[in-house]
Length: 441
Image 1 (cartoon, rainbow, N blue to C red):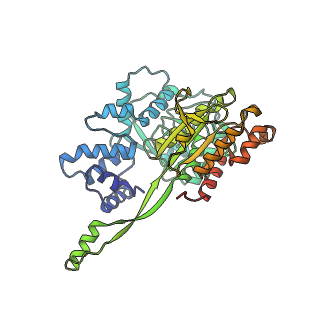
Image 2: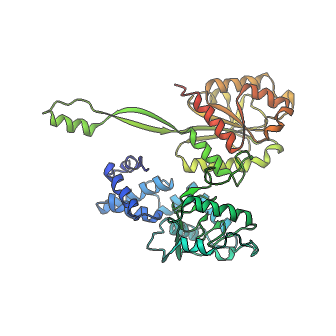
């Protein structure tokens, strides 16, 4: 956990090493860190030794934990506003509070309130076990939801569910899912947002199960995206309910490339012990890298229902994993060019496209359905060139697999490029196939 933290903070000229990790882990073990705000305060105490370190520390913290890069001379407010993390949070927050009419300044303040929420800010920590035992798992959902309770600026209390076994929480979750009919927020029982229920997101429930949303407090024990802990339909075309499961499947394409690097500090230290005989001391470094290209068919009505969900999936992917992600568009099939914009007005010719790093993982997303004359020799040659250049190329099809045999062009393309359903399970199988092919070096 947090193995890459020292190196990232050293990028900002801060003193951080393995001792930083040891102190951080001890703090976590002693229960000093329960929210993201606690993390900020504890790390500040470990790393910041001089007032001049506060600026670099803040930049490093926001970059590492929130993927918000503060450029030189830029205010924190401006960096937050242009960040994808804030845009995702704002979208989720406004969905939870559709009746709120607040300006951008206030939204940033509320974002900061949540990011820097500490245990000391939560006025009351109540027993999750007491709430759990008091609530009736079989109560009907007949109150039409309690969305009006959600509006608040500061959390007044937090529920701690750490004493309840995960199996017991999951058993109760199954019963609640059978009863729940409406959206809920601000409560302590239903799957919802902004409350102290052990199920949902955007609230204050330590060691609960996050369902949906983007997280924030980092207090959840398990996340809906893992099918082992939440009943997600892995064979369903990706949608709002299983997009986190699809995201979890995509994690598998992150590669760890080990290599040796000269350990300067150890070389000097050991050389001095030898009386000036300096022999190179090497250390193994794991470089996590991820390069992804998306080629999305956005030109026909048959793809319209899937475009938003596809973008949401890979937007979450880009937010959560630091990597290189490029997106291009095409209409029905690819001939001699793809396009870098949604309107397909900015062409990128295939000859130029094929000059990219061969280690990119390429996901082609489309229903592969078109008139037979559209899939001509030029198009098939282009697909073969892409597959030859980028060994890890797969096709994700949003059309249910049971209908694939009805479409002529789909079956031709499927013989050229490995095709998988655009479902969490299909994505997982596609990633496994990519990984079996090894590196392109």
